[in-house]
Length: 243
Image (cartoon, rainbow, N blue to C red; front, side):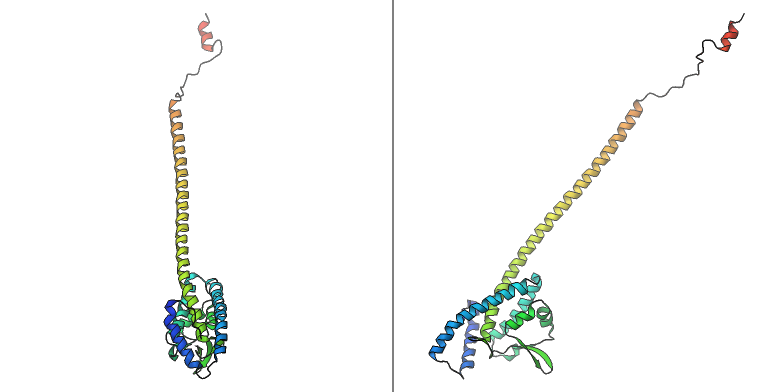
């Protein structure tokens, strides 16, 4: 069986998975022709699954959530998948209760989280009267891929998405800071303009008051004149004029 085309960080996991698959398939060995046929179909199956996980991550986990929530759900899913890939035969890593706070808050409570869990190969099962999400390495997702193959593909895609989320979040943060600084600068300019207008009004009022006082000081004081009879001859003059 051809090994899964994966990046170097997953080489150890790939070796473990191949060994586990060999043990699981030992009870039903394939012929050479069947192996060749499976290898041909596996590359296409891997490509299709990769596209599906890519769309799931972009549209549901990232597209429908904030970067904080998207990072939270993907990081939690990676913790679950890496534990299984590091030790595929350890049953302790193959189940988690639905009531787990980590699962509830970081996966099931976030948009797209449950769908991603199912896509990775987890299924619900009642164990000891408690609903539990389980992963069965012996199950086959869809020939020619095993469930471990699917888990590894999904893990690789999500590992890449986590880094992309961090990069996008950092760019958004820088953009937000720049936008905030720009808005703060506009606010300061607006306040400065208002203050400038206020000072101009105050200065104009002071000038007008000063001009008014100056003009009032220049105006001659009103003089009070005695009342003079404007008639040609007053009664007193007539008496004085009589012989």
